[in-house]
Length: 161
Image (cartoon, helix red, strand yellow):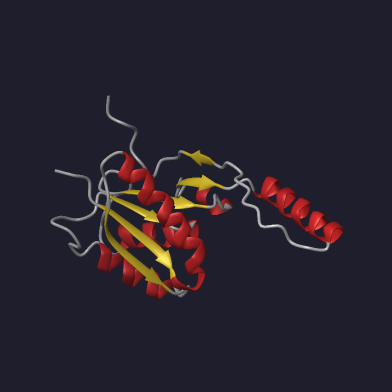
């Protein structure tokens, strides 16, 4: 059976979360997979919990095998919901991956696998762009890619040999 992957995003940060989900979809397509269920919610914890329950209420032929949350706050709330409300074990029953590597992601209770953005490098690049714009009195249109890194913790199972 193909892997069933769900995505949880947040509506108020739509542009950021859309970009993150787009990157996920592109990476999945490269290995022949796709997202089969998604939900976008506001920042309220109760809404995140409800959306998580809905995603795991048979959105595809079976319960999702994995959940990608567009930020770690969503992932942590989803993990709590999966465990407490649905009785699922992370990662045995469902893998969970977040984005941002916020400090609670490393807590033993979560051990969340997450994507870490290079915040200092991003800030340096932004400062360089702003300084150049002030000097030249115009804002040049440039795209700067600053690579991040995957932080693998216990919210996913190791790959099978």
